[in-house]
Image (cartoon, rainbow, N blue to C red):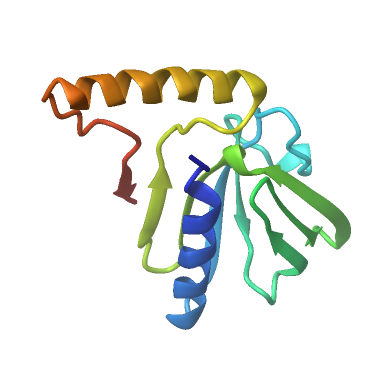
Length: 139
């Protein structure tokens, strides 16, 4: 199954804008492929304002979040693999969503998912119910 994070990210982004709030995202800057101005990274993380007034050409794709922003008057292209996004929330109210770790599609993840799915189907057939899995929590 495809990761839920990009779909939830887009939905929460729209909800935050419709609520006339400012959408911020918390990014794990230590994930491979993250391109952000390193001088603004603290403790391996960076918070970015992704409102339409703060960034240009925002793309909330299934694999990457990309945009152009300004930091201290300097233009910078931001590239964020979707797995680097740890949370999206309203700057002022703090309402939003933090994402748990989730499998992202790679060759090894697809194999792991197939193995997990087979085990889950077998367990369901035997009558046990497994309600574990990725969960989300409010920030």
